[in-house]
Length: 303
Image 1 (cartoon, one colour):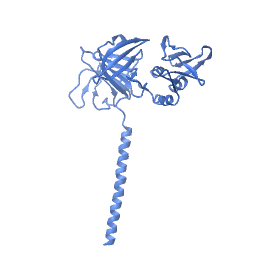
Image 2 (spheres, rainbow, N blue to C red):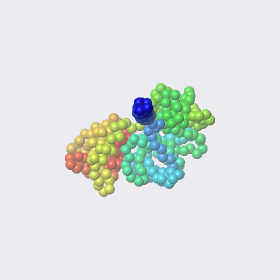
Image 3 (spheres, rainbow, N blue to C red):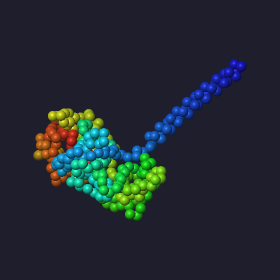
Image 4 (tube, rainbow, N blue to C red):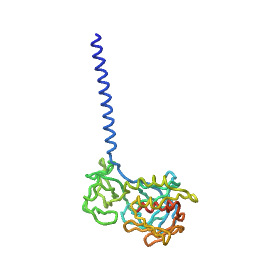
């Protein structure tokens, strides 16, 4: 009896150990699957009504209030894409009127200045058309053009316009793996709903190298008149810019492809291509490093 009892106990312990390893393996498998699951979109959405508009230097500032009375300040410049929801036509800053209902999409990986109400420059703004029915979806799709959230299936037709962010015509194969702006009017009652879009535009998003810029700032900054001052060269070069010192004018030239910034220490104004912009606080030299106000970061990461 003792022998049988010992064997039974050993079998029970073995089963327990195997069961534990099996459960652990299942947990690890689930974890791996979850880690590999791709996010359905890189963008966050904020929708509401424009309550105030304010024109500034080459931009317009919108105060937008959502249904929960939460506010967001949107800085709209020439880099922001603006579209009508019904016609899918491109708009201009002058089309953004007080009282209009809009949807603003911004990259969730974009470093954001931590103030309230939140202030940012969205990559995309959709103005709701009250007279022409139309919907817009921003997201990623698989090779069969099913959205990764499983909520919409695209049937691309011969009349569907396919464009990149610069407005140039592209092929259907160039849509794969990209974040898409999809304009459509009606859907089927199937699950998932299906639609033939009128227009699809690829939407760029921020590269991974922008994700660590806040860590750089956290380790190297100071406050002046309530404004955070950040190291120009460290931040700009991390984002891929070239920074050239200009001792004769006590400043620097910051360039990336077709974008250039001419900065002088002690002056709140700076050159951006052929336009003039303003810092919140004038750049200054501290410990042999040029610091600029944090509002400049938002313009850098748009390029």
